[in-house]
Each structure stands twice: as structure tokens, then as C-alpha cells.
Length: 582
Image: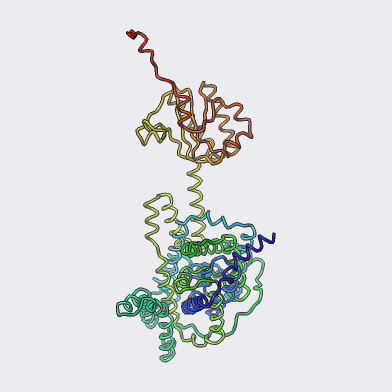
């Protein structure tokens, strides 16, 4: 027990023993860069979630400390993200306005509790049930929905809506109420952020600036752009021209209290909290795995559940809302030199300083500028090329991806991931219910056996081999019975049938019952049933039953051994009248 505890501690905080001044310097630089990116994002994503800007700052302090303590990734940067913010907005929009802040905190507490319980149950393997095409299409759909949702701030209209169609319809209806100042500020901000992301670093390098310095300037550009807009808005008082601004942002550290709402409201948040927990875990774990792979490391899925769960609980107890691992900030953290969780602790400290002293400076910031920042950030999440590649490779996976994308747009973010997961599972079940079961033959002069319909192979009329390309269980057992009956009916000379079990990893009780039925039916037709290439653990389980005692044939180690033993020898009867002259 002590050894296991020591191993867990070393795995969690083993980096402390190797910590040095040079690593501290890299962590500090990374923390500064991430904070510069996080300050405007925390405000923007809080606005996207339908919450006051201070809530975004609160969600960027304690969650980072909690994840640094319990998370498994050394470089993952947690906090507010676009997708989770949009899901939060759609969830709390159903609540009375005066309960939305406390409802968002309660939602974070519920999400965190679910992740912690999943960690206790060692349910990290559950992320394997969410297909990558579903995740990619979901993020693309959510990003597209977010972009549409932010156009209302750029146009200076009320807009609103939970689905893409509703948002577009509301924008169309209010097109005559567009605020010219908001449109002008939003357009300039969009152009500035776009150039900062895609052009500044390249132009600086061409001008002779070192690549590292150019990248640093590119990452600092958003905060500088925001500072310029704050200054202009303050000097000109743009709010008097109808431009919506952030307004007063209360200073101070986040309050620590348990969010209390009525039981009925908690019950209403249960399903959305479950969906947010799934998306948060899958998205964060995918990012963590990508970062770990670059350093030839790995992460622990169950510890990720604890880390993310603790971060969400910390956010809920400190007036925040559900958080997630940010792909963009994590990549920046890694690129800037962040090597340990201490960089996240430093970011939390800098965000606390922001909450204490810098919030008054944010008051004149136009909402159109924050909307532009969100739109540019979401452009990088659009991955239609991945959906197309998936469709080209696999129509089934492509259909799942397209359905997920459309579900997000037409039904809302809460149902998009559920639709994708349910469809992916349904198509998987459909595939296993109707597995590929071809008749196989031998490549001439070899010991290799392949699909007789796809290759030119040697076959035998008396001995047929049916290859089963799936494990046998209750859902496909009857399919096997029907396939065997089809083979028997179309080959009247059949005397032996071999079931080639290369891909069979499991035979459950229902499938065993079907095999007994097949054996009895073949026996009544004077046909023997054999097995080849059966895995040892499957064969060992069959020995626990009485099936092998009644099996009319044999279990062969390999398919070639079965054919060598069963196929009839050459017929020399036509040589009976041959005169031997020797």
C-alpha cells in the first residue's frame, strides 16, 4: 500500500524533485504569455456564457490551482473556453435572470461532482465511446454556432436564439436596427485580430526580427489591440453613441460559497451538466494526450477526471462556471516553454492580481471588440476538412460527423454531442449485428486464405470455410445461423463446414446456444462442423461447456491444417485401366 502511494505521489508531483531555476524561468515566461491571452478571453467567454465579465475572471483563478494539484497533464491550461461557455449559456438561459449567476456556479459544481465520481469509479475508459469524428464535428459545429451568436454584438442588435436558424432569423429581422458605431468598431477589431493572428509574426520575421520575438509579439498583440480600443472608447465616450461596453467590473478576489438553488432547478440542470461533463472530459483529454505525445509521455484518464472535476468544483465554489482544458492556451503554454503545473499556478496568481487591481480599466471596453476576439478564436476551431476526409475514408463515420455537425446547428449544443454519440453507437451495433462472413479459399501454392469473392483462390466443393469477422454475441448469433443455412443450401455436395475464427475474440452464452443449434442442424444433414484459428482464451471458455463433447468435427490450430486434414485426396479412378509396363 505504501509503495503504491509513493508511486502515485511520484507520478503526480515527481517534477518537484527535478525543478530548477531555468525551468522556473520558462514557466514564468509561459505564465505571462498565457495570462496575456487569458485576460481578454475570460471576459469574452463570460459574455458568451451570458454572465458578467467578473465571472470569467473568477473561473480563471481557483480552477487553475485545483487542476495543478490533481491533474495529470503538466501543460494543460484550464479555464473558460468557447464551447463550454456556449453550452453554459444555453443551459442557464432557461433559468430566471436573477438566478443565472448562481445557476452557472451550481452547474460547475454538478459537472465537477460527476467527473469526480467517474474518477472514483475509474471511468476514464468511457472517453473511448466518443468517436473522434464526433468530437471534431461537434467542435466545428459549436464554433460555427458561436460565430453566428457573436454577430449580434458586432451589429449592435439584440439577436439571440439557441439554434443557428433562430439566430439567423433574429438577425435578419433586426437588420434595420444595426448600430453603425458597433459595426465599425467590430469590423476594425475583426481585421486587427485577424492580422495579429495570421500576419504579424510573418511580417516581423521578414523585417529581420527573430522568430521567437515575432511569436511573442503576435501573442501579445490581442491585449495591445484591446488596450487601444479601451483607450479610444474612454477618450471618445463611444457608449454615448449607442455602443455597448463592458461597464463596471467589481474588483476583488472571488467569493467562496456553496451555490444554493432549488431542488427543481438542480434537477433541470442534471442532463445539461452530464453533457458538459462528457464534452469537457473528452475535449480536455484529447488536448492533454496531444501535448503529452509531443514529449513522449502519457496521461492518466482517471486522474484527468479528478483534476477536471476538482477544477470545476473550485470554479463553482468561487462564483465561476464550468471550465475546460483550452486547446489554444495549452498550445501557447507549451510553445512558450511551460514545463510544469507551476505555470498554471502562476497564471492563477496573475489573474488574482487582475481581479484585485485592473478591473476598473476594463469598463470602457466595447462588447463588439470581445465578440470579434471570440469570432477570430473560433475560426481556428472550424475543421470542415476533417469532416470531408472522414467522409471520403468511411461513409459511416462521415455520416456520423455530418449528423453531429447539423445537430449542433439545428438542435443546439446540448444535443449535438448526444446525437453524435448515439448515432455512432447505433452504427457500430449495426455493423456488429451484420458482420462480414465470407467464404474463403487458398491462394495457390501458399497457406494464405482470403475472401473467395474478392480474390482468385482455390476452393473445394465438399469442404467450405466461413470466416467470421466479428466476435459472436447475442445480437449477431442468429445472423450466423442464417449465414450457415445459406451456405448449406447453395452447396449440396458439402460434407464439412469450417468456421474460421481469426477475428472472434468472444463467444457469449447466446452465441454458444446458436453454435449448438448449428451443430445439430448440420449433423442431421450429415455435415460435420469444425473450427480453425480459434484464440486460446475463446477455446478455453468453450471447454467450460459441454458443447465440445457434442461437436461433430474438430478444432484445428490453423486454417491450413484444417484443409490439409479434411479436403479429399485426388481421385485416381480414371487410371484404373492403365497398363503398368514397369
